[in-house]
Amino acid sequence: MERKSFSCRQIGIVEHNNICFLLFAMLLSCSLCSSCNFSSAKRHNRIDKTSTSSTNTIAISLFDVGYPSISDTTSSTMLERMCYSVSYNKFTRQPNWVMWQLTGEHVMKRKDGVWNEYREDLELPSDIRSTLDDYASSGYDRGHMCPGGDCNWDDEGRDETFLLSNMCPQNPNLNRGDWKEIEIACRKWAKKYDNIYIVCGPIFFKSQEHEKIGPHQIPVPEAFFKVVLCIEPSTPKGIGFICRNTDGNRKKDFYVNSIRQVERVTGYKFFPKLNDSIKSVVYDMDNLNEW
Image (tube, rainbow, N blue to C red; front, side, top):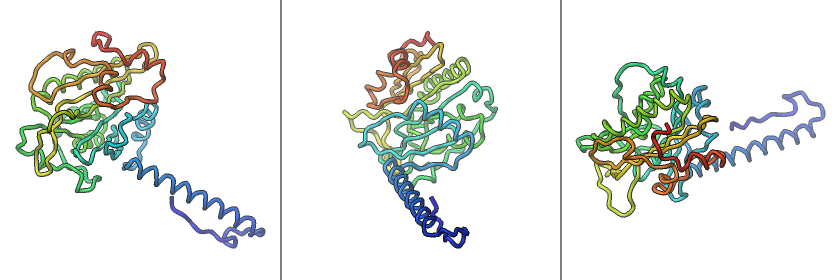
């Protein structure tokens, strides 16, 4: 917060001693608030994008159900985008998780076209961000976590999905096959139920050494997770997916897990602000037929 200095003469107050004291107290209060905000921002390593009405609408909606809770020892820099939010890990140079809201209106507003403008995320310092060279000739796709197709209702939002901070090294057959099919299913569900919440990200198995690619030795995830939540009052529901980062062409139900099972595998707590009465209904659902 920018601090401004005022004098009693400037504001034309006769009883200047009392007023100046009051102003001093107010400025001190603002200074303390600013200090608290700075400490909070530093603690969470948060980088906020310039606000727009669309960003605010979605951020409030995500805030209502809560960002995933992760371990305090996990590196996390928060990045707010037009249509999604990212917890970015400076050591893996990949997201811990990406979260967004997808509505039926977003799906209906999707524009035709193909976009392919992959680029570095220049909001991140150069010593913690991935580069195009990291993926070049690696044998892995730059796999979207939040897909461009989910943000195609807004040009800026769609373009931001091509930032490498939204990418992980993904097996081409998974990225272009089963993972894509799950993305398409999510759009159908958003259209059917009008509003869903999605969180996805990489899974690194602690029990094995990770394959690494590129000049920055980016670790390759062993698997990926995705959880989907619908809190439509009459039919709340949830479902999870865990996909090994390998070749494969299987039906979606092969990858199905409950949200609670995905929490056990990742160690994350999804939708922490969700009402317990809804959690008790949706967290153990693992049947695609209910969607």
